[in-house]
Image 1 (cartoon, helix red, strand yellow):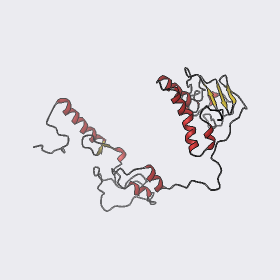
Image 2 (image 1 turned 30 degrees about the vertical axis):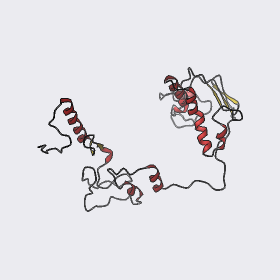
Image 3 (image 1 turned 180 degrees about the vertical axis):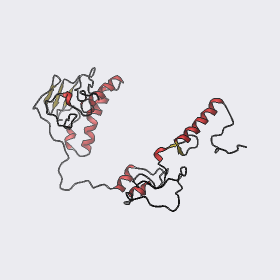
Image 4 (image 1 turned 60 degrees about the vertical axis):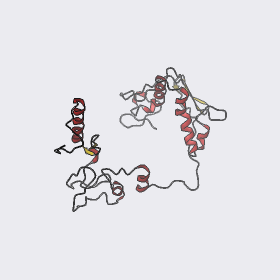
Length: 259
């Protein structure tokens, strides 16, 4: 990924590291994991497998053959080797201006394809032994374009909750048009709320329905309610429990005579 400054301009190879204005994970994610593992007594080999072996194996199993000879120290594999000090390796990059790209400490040497690219913690200029890693070129591709229906069936579930027809709404090619004028209010499983159809319809909204992103599952009644009502139910239940009172039944509707 190209390094950019705060103006979005691409940095040169030897630009001051303080000019980098990207995310600090670009500079410190591996060292952060090694530090956290050390501080929390995670076995070092387990951490190294997360950083190298499993990534290479998963990509190799997916068909990227170049990864079959990477991710582990073994005769016949590619010599991509990071030499680090497990007792003090740590990240230095953070979100402060001028520190987004600070290099990690405790990594004195790095080899790529058997060639040293970092020596005494200094990145060597004009040393580029890396090789492209990609899927093999085939006459006919294996992948088919996705569509809304396939994506929804793969990555969403029908909760049967506040939006019982969400699946159909998203598949509706007319979903970006104006809201339909319904003759009768729709009775949902949540509290019935009548709202004017003033906004344009979108994929994730029902016409004339309450926005269930503002609903909460009441721990007392086990149904979706607005935030204030759910908080009130819970507060009343806590008052009863803490005061050993026996008069309040949270399962009864307000105004219902318990007798």
